[in-house]
Length: 639
Image 1 (tube, rainbow, N blue to C red):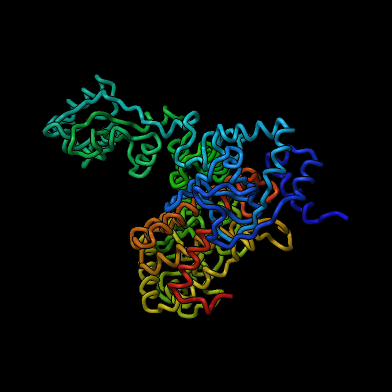
Image 2: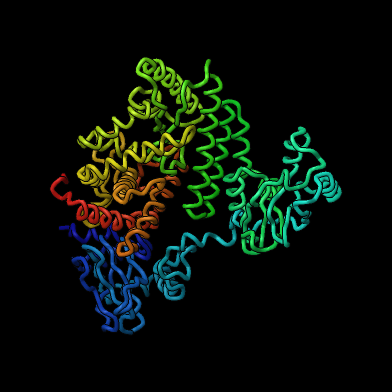
């Protein structure tokens, strides 16, 4: 009669080295001798300096932390399939570390007396063990982990051999042409021509106080607005925008885009209090990289139709792919790609406004919501947007809304042509429910907050991440102020919002198994958005709203701000910030790999390292939800 338990043990072990090297009869014999051990959370497996047990361990379910006694710092964490406690047995020494279950855990205890003869018989197993000791890692076959005990490189380190050029220090011109503010324009123009430069720096007491470029000469002098006999002070741009000489190419791109200028002045310490040492032009940056964010931004602003913008979108995705391959920090990736996405949407809106038969009847604002509003829409997922326009007299209401609905429909259609899919729930500005005047939006949001049922909480969660893509920002600011005032007036709304943030299912079940879809189109797939991303996004929203903090929509940045506001929870919030970036990065990689939204993950296609990284975020999700539950007292509202 077959031993079904030992068969299950064998089926598990053969997935991992060095057991996958063993012959079938060797694995069967070894599995028959395995003892299955259950450990509660925080229970000890063995302590530092303790004599070695008669067996070593393999993690079947759960996780085991390896630490130095008395230290909180984890030197390693053993996950599914990891071996630990073997070296002391082979080296005849006491345990060097303490092993503690980090959660409810099942271990396979493998007797050394049964394993040692097999290792001696099988040269590959012996090689594995020797290399494990030499490289100080549990899996020496993983080249990327050699020499690393923890086995996971620091994301910020990147790959030194393939570090992207746009994170290198920028090369700038030291061919400075300077003048005083009293210098005659005719004279300084002659100097620029003679020295073949595109700008001249205006200085006083050796410090930069202004800058004059070819554009200033064209727009102010050549047009006749200012006489060529006037002094430099009449046309200089002041104060000068200065940066440190250690500026990277990416930082230079962002600075030029942000300030909409063509030249940066570099000083020793990045301020106007030290002399200028160089000038950096937009052309210098473009020459350094070629196809880069600054070039793409310029192409977006020059585009006159959706087809051209669609082509540029492909270039943006290629840029994103390159950033991920080079392990560029996720915060920087989000900022660059979001800037490009925002510019694309803004250009689409401008094209559509210009195509309307008449200009907008009143000022309006285009609001991006959801992931785009949070600056987290790296892939071309579906649209979530709204229109907010100025209040009009009663007799003009219908006419005004009709105009903006037509504009909203035109914009949504063009965005779809660019690559932004229609929202399945029609949460778009082409829908009358998402196209209102300021007063109407105040009434709508007040209704959501004063009558917080499940639908109202869902709509609030989507809408309250809005960000201005185009138009009158003051309208959005006034609406934000109204929302924050209402939140103070109706504190129970935050309780219900917190409850809504706790409704998404846990990412993992018993023994940290991934909870997958049980039926439907995505049966047996893991829903990364619903089970991992949304819980951490929703928690950030309600926490930042409870502090009445405006203008921070990005999830990672919200947690970083919360870490400042609540020092006692700093460690948790910073862990949540990291987890949100890690999950977003993982989803983006999956989306690019499978040419979809990256939402549904086929777990059998993930390697062990990818599963471990995902599981490490689950503990943070659980802790942040526990904080919400206690702070907003929503235990009684949970399902």
